Image (cartoon, rainbow, N blue to C red; front, side, top):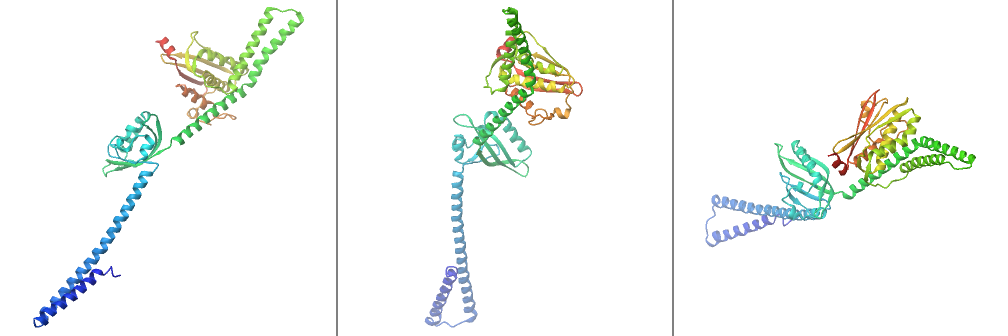
Length: 435
């Protein structure tokens, strides 16, 4: 209470002392006459002045205390913000209107390996991984063009010791009233572990889809395989019976028996390739020989459905580089779909076109064709028009060919048929031979 009115109390006491001294000097010691017209206004003005000075002192004291408290609170807030800024796991950054870094916290060095001191002044785009720079730059241009304020993206930043780190960028773009960029502020969060887990999960799903598709192919071909194996066994049994009756070996009979055994071995080996998990083995192989194997394997199923598979090929090998068993799986799936599309029989034409860098394999059927609205959805996971289909067969085919740096194009006309074009890159040796 005293502190609040300290100035006014002191000024009042000083006023009383002053007036008492004035009266003693002038009215007692010097015997001046009291003049109310002069002394009263003087006393009143002196009292008001003393009171105003005291009041001003008290208010100044209060303002000074508030200012001191505000300054102390500001220092504490600044210390707290600095502590948080320096100890956040997320990178906090700011750029100017040119995209150059102006503020970075120490987490930047933890994430990228670059110190804030050596990075401030450089463009943030400089630290974006080279494969992401083009689209990231275009994204920034579009954001500025449309004055978009909030942006969230996933991008890779290059590390000082090599490689990259996955980052989630949360940015706020600050614009003038005229739409000109002033600065950007935001955070960069390391999501590398989460991203790698996501990629592993996607790879696992793809592997499961491929395995599921293989099992589906095997299940659909079981009847054809049984028929394909039963015929050679019947021939072998008949010739062994003839040998038993004649009681001596004949070379012609023996040759037929071995030929039929080789036929069974071929069918069973192809069945095994499809049924068991395969180790990815990238190598150069002849795509024409692969087609021969696939057509030999699936021809029985085609014959059972009154369908003729016609292969138009050159005698010269066409070499491609990749995983042959996966390519076989793609061809089997496409031909199987063509067979299923021709309920009343028909033909499947298989042909190859070889240019300087790629080979195109065409599979054309004379089936019912695919409507345009359905054609646009082919290859999407779990989309199928079959009653018992999984919708993963063609999805797997698209992924396999994409992993081989190739493409699949589909064209179709309802009532006429469908053509699948599988495009695969040639090996360097094959390119040299063509040139």
